[in-house]
Image (cartoon, rainbow, N blue to C red; front, side, top):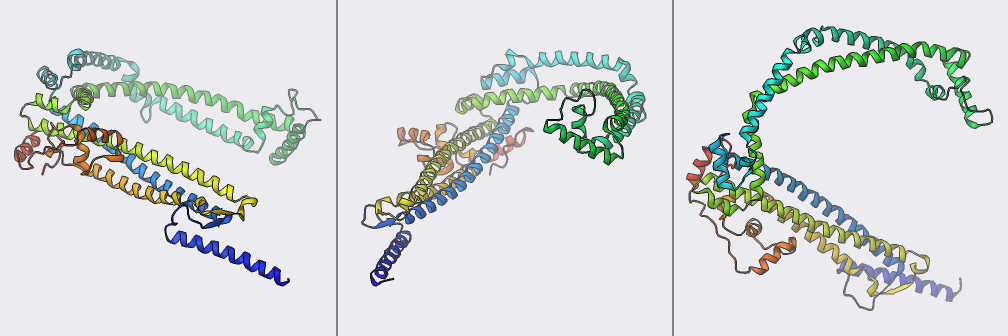
Length: 465
């Protein structure tokens, strides 16, 4: 190589080293300011966008994990909400009586008990169940159930014998059916007048080879003359006993079904009032979850157990709404990350093309904003996790005045306005900048509430300290 060639190579090498050095400086210093005079090769930009794509993908996975945490927490809050509603309903309806149902409707505005009288429904079902049990107990199959399906019952013995014979013939059939390709030959009616494959088709020769192989494995000479008759001698009785097993099984299941219906009916008769009371709690609980807590409190009078239950229910409703709102916000960030990653991957492909790989590009082509976006996304992710954990662990429902606007639960739980965490809720805070949260003194009525709740068998409000 002459002197000019050596100088050219040195210049090219120096230029590339300079680009690498500039890239390292950008990475070390947060990638500098946009709009400078630094230039990069296509290779540098391809590597930078590849790095960006990898970081975006990692952040997408991390944020996806946070989303799963929030969704799981929301599911648990939903369970707690349903449980709290049922517990509160149990306070409103302590027993299944006309007086208790009427008082619950008066205090809750629920009209389901008067429209669909559970007491009348329970008595109708009691009559029907009693009739069904009596009829079953007169049924001959039920009377002779031990003789039919007991450990040594006639049906039990018949089923065991039929099953044993079926298994015996099935084992004989498996000697044939277990051979590779045997059932295909049977289905194709190979080596019979109904076999449709002709000698000029590939399947003919493939099945012919399989037939020869099966004959050799069984030690027989011909598939049609020897194998098929031997197989049929085992298959026919197997199918016969298969039918017997099915018939006897049906007889057994009829007796067992009758016994089960009897036992289920007797159990329901014995627990009918508990079942209907639980259904009354469930129906009222659905109503309570959608009702205005402050209005219910105004109807509750001085019942501290109801007051605490209503506060907890209101707080859990807010929790569930907030977890669902956070999930939507996180999903919007996930979509933005996915879109940015797709754009970065397009850039990797663009700058990886031969004609662009060694070209020079201005500083503006560098993905500085994309790398900053990743940093901001990571910071937001940790904030999502922190805020969601604050909401989940909150349990000081008893100190929140029930007459506060329900939107204030967010501030109560997190200590801050919702902002971008819950944009829809932030609108309310913007319209009410001077609103304050009213708290109940933690010592007020503390002992009295604890005593009132302790007296209620169905109250699960827990420690009020």
